[in-house]
Image 1 (cartoon, rainbow, N blue to C red):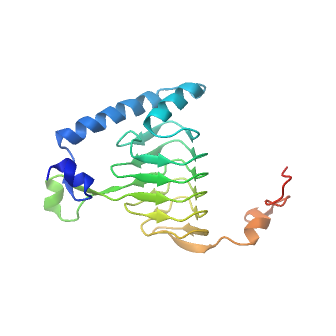
Image 2: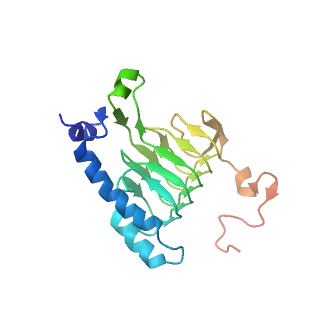
Image 3: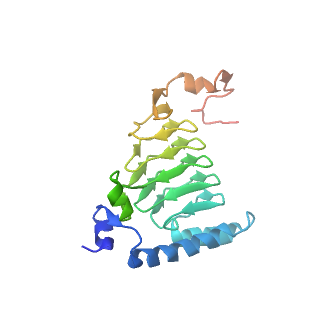
Length: 205
């Protein structure tokens, strides 16, 4: 099998194969154009994003992606803060209404532990799946093959090495479930700061 075929099959492969690198550079060039746009150039940014990944989302610059966001699949109404890195050698799926804090890393790629394999430049890739309405705090690192369930919150600085279920707050290194999201979260928006309206009301302030 060629390195390109091994990559498609999810097997360890040599990452600096010319067929892989040439395709990768094309996507990176387009992302570089996006990173050079001005914040006020909304239409230009929308046009570039629609070509490389998604519309109806906000991605602050700079943003880095190994494959120029080609393998990043956004839902709708996603906000991605600045300095986020998508190591998108495998697919990264992020659901509707997610918020991604600055400096977050989505790492689908890893290297074998055996030193000889690293000398030979082998790498492996595993996809990442993030559900809908997930809030990922600043500086979070998400490792290869991870799934995060709908509505969960990942605390800033966490290193996510295992799957996180839906409807929980998870923090730490390694990231672990702190508690479920419950009725108190309907009353308090942050620590003991009380919300002054019903979040399920038809008439929001």
